[in-house]
Image 1 (tube, protein in one colour):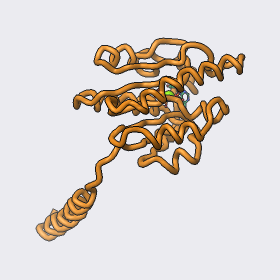
Image 2 (cartoon, helix red, strand yellow):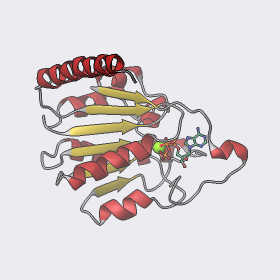
Image 3 (cartoon, protein in one colour):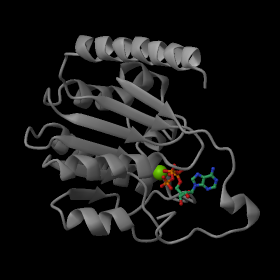
Image 4 (cartoon, helix red, strand yellow):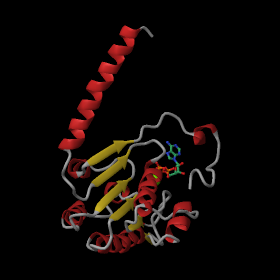
Length: 199
Ligand code: ATP
Ligand code: MG
C-alpha cells in the first residue's frame, strides 16, 4: 500500500467509526425484545438456545417452552436445566408425524398455559418459545391469545420465537427478525442427524 492509499483507508475507517459511534449513541431505549428466528435453514433453535446460554451467563433468568415433542433428548435441556433454566415440554402429542389431532390440540393447550405463566412472571428475564410457529400454522393455538400474552408481559422480559413459516403478525410486532436460509443440509445427502449437532 502506498502512503496515499493508507491515508485514504484511515479516513474511510474513521468515517465508518463515526457513523457506528453515532448509531450506538442514538440507541438509548431499553426494553424487553421480541425476537423471531424463522426460515428453512438449520440454526433456528440453536440460535434461541445460544441466546438463553448467553443470558444465563450474564446472570439473567430464563425459561424454555418446547412446542414439539422430540423423539430424542435435547442437549441444551440437559445442560441448561443444571443452570436453573426451567423447561416446559409438550409431553404428549404433536410431533412431525402427527396422527391424533385432538390429542395434539390438548397438548398444545397444556404447554401454552405454562408459556402464559412464564410470560406473566416478572422474575423471568427471557422466555424461549421454541417451535411456537407450528402451533399457529396448524391452528392449534389462537393468534389473539399469543398476541395478548406477548403484549402484557413484563416490560423488561425478552422473548424468542423460533420455527419455520412464522405468522406475518408475529413478524410485524417483533423487534428483531432473522430468516435462516437453507443453502444445503447434510440430511439431503443421506447423512443421519448427529448427536451434539442436530439435537
Ligand atoms: P437446529 O435445532 O439444528 O437449530 P432448526 O431449529 O433450525 O435446527 P428445525 O426445523 O427445528 O430446525 O429442525 C430440527 C431438526 O431438523 C434438527 O435436527 C436440524 O438439524 C434438522 N434440520 C433443520 N433444517 C433442516 C433442513 N433444511 N434440512 C434437513 N434437516 C434440517
Ligand atoms: Mg428448531
